[in-house]
Image 1 (cartoon, rainbow, N blue to C red):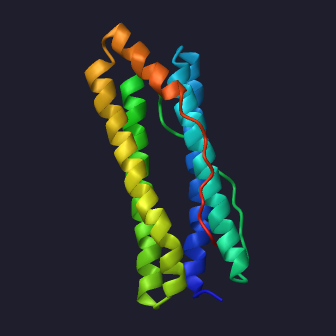
Image 2 (image 1 turned 135 degrees about the horizontal axis):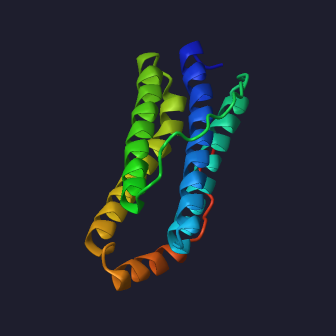
Image 3 (image 1 turned 90 degrees about the vertical axis):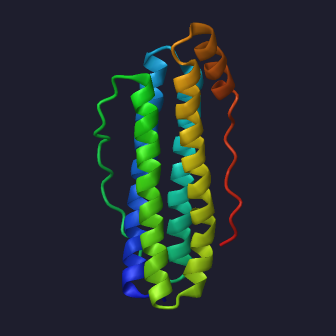
Length: 170
């Protein structure tokens, strides 16, 4: 059994991961409606990743005999009016999720829950990659987004992204 606070934080994180998937699906819809199908694809894949993060945490709780408490997923609340601003919202959200993962890690560390810390190591690494990807998208949009040909090439690059399920052993 996990320490109560660690279990509670992981349960809350499941909801946050589902919210992330919902938020990125909203971003995908925005880009699709604005004719940027590559950006839409990139965020659709991102939504799939976030859903899988939630499922990994859910399975971890179950594997440790913990009760999973699912809550309602909030509606995304960002006003999506500018293609660059959406990317900045993505980075801001990833930084927020990183802080949540760190809080769970800190709680596990404080009670010497090494198994949970080891489980979270993958998420810590993943968040570093997520923030880097978000930063790179912003840089590329700032460089090429005002040029039609550059935006077309960037959109084409993002259209090629395919979903790859995480390979984390629980």
